[in-house]
Image (cartoon, rainbow, N blue to C red; front, side, top):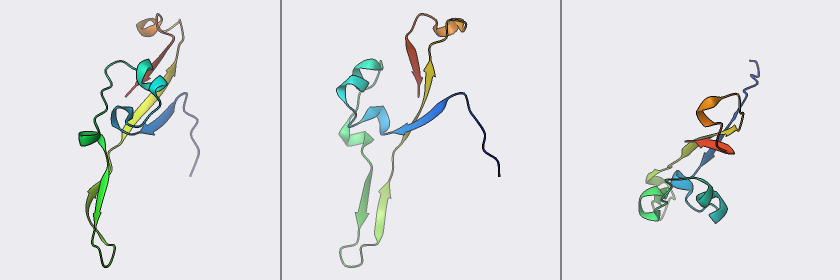
Length: 82
C-alpha cells in the first residue's frame, strides 16, 4: 500500500460534539448535543458479556484552515465541515 498526503485532516467526534469542551461547542454554529439521541450504547448479556444490541454514533469533521484565496469562506477565521 501507499500513504497518501491529504491537505486536510478528518476528525471523528461524538455527534454534535457531545461531551466536547464548551469552547468547541461555542465555536461551531448549529450544534445541539442531546444525550438521548447522540449517545452510543451497548447492551450485554449478564452472564456471558456478549453484546446483544448496540450502536456507535460518530460524526466526521474536516478542519479547513482559512485561506483568503478561497472566496467561499474568506471572511471566517476557520471552517469546520461536518
